[in-house]
Length: 157
Image 1: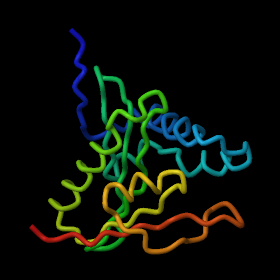
Image 2 (image 1 turned 90 degrees about the vertical axis):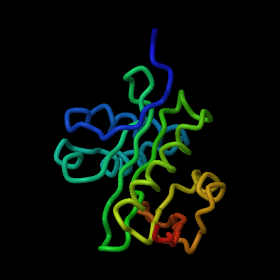
Image 3 (image 1 turned 90 degrees about the horizontal axis):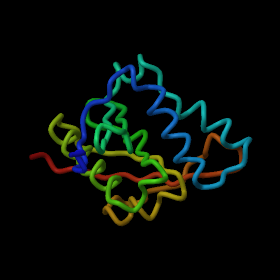
Image 4 (image 1 turned 120 degrees about the vertical axis):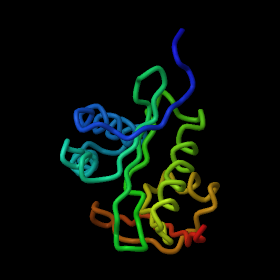
């Protein structure tokens, strides 16, 4: 019988192509122009070395990757939720929230006290619902465009 319970685990370096393709598909869901997608493609491509060096986690259903997130250390106290993507065919099933809460557990367990998220504008509502305050808008990698920046101060356990 297939395992339909979502499982979150560390990503494996050899999954870099699958993970990158998922991020690109997820970003394309918002109907960005081909020019914008070319910029995003380079930002969303993870190499095997990236997965080895970073904290990258996948969520799977029956061993199929349906989403992933990555964390990038900013300094000893701050960490960025660099990526959080769900396969477009699996949206609105709670996988994004599950990964976010998992990331929060990882972040807290490692002693970080500040979470930063530079979000796609289309994901703003997701982070607001999760209680992460919007603190400012910052320039995007796309000229003339800005993106929301969220920040959450975490309580030490």
